[in-house]
Length: 134
Image (cartoon, rainbow, N blue to C red; front, top):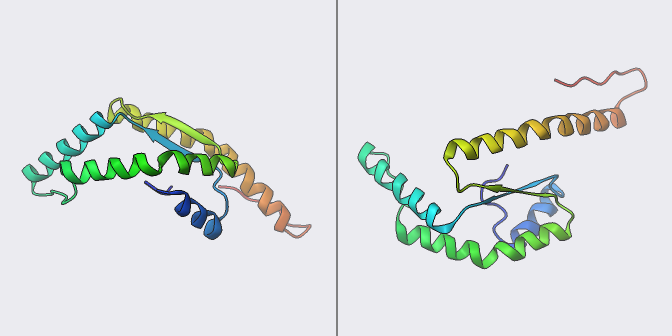
């Protein structure tokens, strides 16, 4: 899982060159206003607790959103052209709701990942070896 990556078609191309085509892309979609409210809220809470992040401010958040909107559609399109399945998650709900969606995706992916692991091990094993999956 690469948070916020790829950020551009060039990043996506480099990712595929280095690691191969991803089996899945998660597109976490959220309204800009909600994102800004969350970032500003996290910044306030960080200041109160003494754990502030330098980038939790309106100007930095706005710049990040501008960059996102500039590169988002071309990056998604490039991933589609590479036949990467894209799962869209609505992240405008509560953080608990978003987390529940991510857990559900993980539960759905586990059997597919184990099946792929078994296939890979079957391809690589000697005739007397038995595949083992945790």
